[in-house]
Length: 116
DNA sequence: CTGATGACTATAG
DNA sequence: CCTATAGCCATCA
Image (cartoon, rainbow, N blue to C red; front, side, top):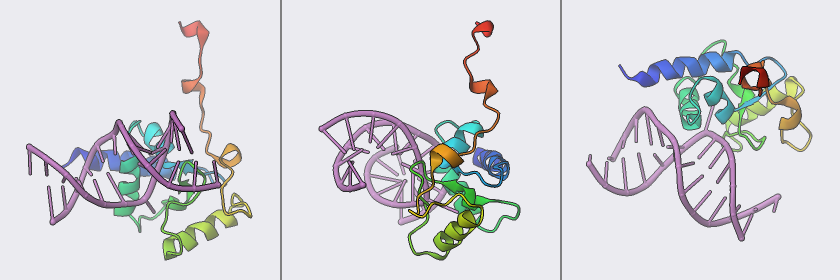
């Protein structure tokens, strides 16, 4: 058994937590899953589970706001269609991360002077 | 063991 | 806006 499988489950769980109408970057998913340097693992986890049910894989995009899929591929087209259906895809074909990037309860990341 | 690869990213010019 | 580069880590030849 590889420890990677456990990480993979955490990654998939995190992706399942992305709310409708929001998107997350590979690096963001990795960080939330407890793998700050695991962006590559997120990509691998998705590649290993292309048909996992209950997995909104299309909400995972690149940090620059574009799809990571090969342009023109079936997955690429499906991802764009799904994102457009949720109303997060701009006419330019690029996602406005400032507006639609998933913002979970960030309290744990905020600077809290009273804790120092 | 070594080097290449990938549904990636941040930074620099 | 663009390209180049280093860093990343599991997997494969």
